[in-house]
Amino acid sequence: MTKTSAARVYRGTPRNLRFLAQQLRRGELVAVPTETVYGLAANAFDAEACAKIFRAKGRPATDPLIVHIHDLAQLSELGVVNDAALKLADTFWPGPLTMVLPKKPVVADAITAGRPSVAIRMPQHRLLRQLLRLSGVPLAAPSANPFGYVSPTTARHVRDNLGTKIAYILDGGPAAIGLESTIVDLRNPRAPQLLRPGAITRDALEQVLGIPVAALKRSSDSHAKSGQLSPGRMKRHYSPKTSVVLHDSLADFPRRDEAYVCIRRPAGRLPKNVFWLDSRGNLRAAASRLFAMLRELDAMGFRRIHVERARGEGMAEAINDRLRRASAY
Ligand code: TXA
Ligand code: MG
Image (cartoon, rainbow, N blue to C red; front, side, top):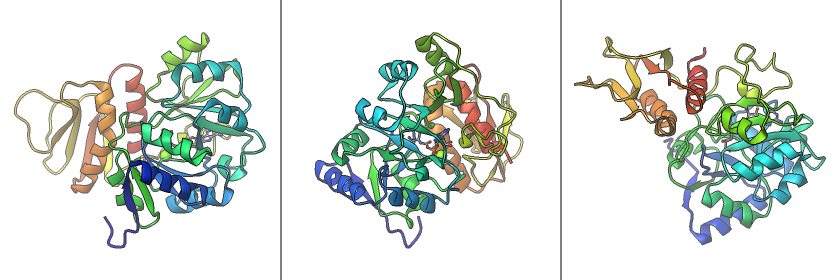
């Protein structure tokens, strides 16, 4: 933590929630817990407040924000809704799913980076839902990390990174999921496209929609190339400062000044520089530990961090997507 930290961390008492809701309505920024990662929130109807988000994060103005809503009335207030979106909302909201839809004029260009579409999510975290209800406005919020760094999964992570830039942090405990929401582009409801894999898998989306969901394309990941697509797909993102090297499997650990992160605990006696995301290799548990692990190892001064890829589909796809970005140079 920095010496000049201005941020105060608030517990989710009714009084604190009323106070923070009032700050949001007044145009202040509040870092908020969600079930995925912590977000840096502002009143989505206040373009000036939203502009502060970009300054605090050092985020380029070309990278649009997700708008968090409390109820479906706010969905149709912000976006042009279609049947596919309603089906997914019905099944997965509140939850870790973000939908991209054509935007209504009320959504400021500052939020969408001038695009005609808006990304909308109804989060599940109990305290954030209360804050959304009390503030009475949708909240624009990207992840509460400095641009390009690993997303925060605790209030402490937010304070460590943004403590000098913001005044208010709501502590809702460690994020249950630990990876950012799944993003699906539903501008054309007959041709949905995955923009970012997450805890809601492509398979789960397809089962509800009854049509294929185009997979995330890996090759043209760059912002410049993917004009219409999600800039969050840019390759280098979520990166610790220490360089990350990926492996299909990790079985030996030759260098003592480098860290090795396995998905599950390897058998036998292990040197101190070997870590694991979940003792039994449960992928949901592993995902929830991943970002905190990268931050901890980043602070420990290892020369490099070796990480084992997750195997399988679904959650493995989301974990490997974040690993790929953390290791991209
Ligand atoms: O889980 C999450 O989604 C977290 C929590 C705080 O809700 N938020 C989050 O926000 O991860 P952020 O800003 O770090 O990532 C949002 C992504 C960015 O990649 C952005 O480019 C994309 O959403 N996005 C936002 N609006 C978009 C739009 N209109 N079209 C395509 N992509 C959009
Ligand atoms: Mg982010």
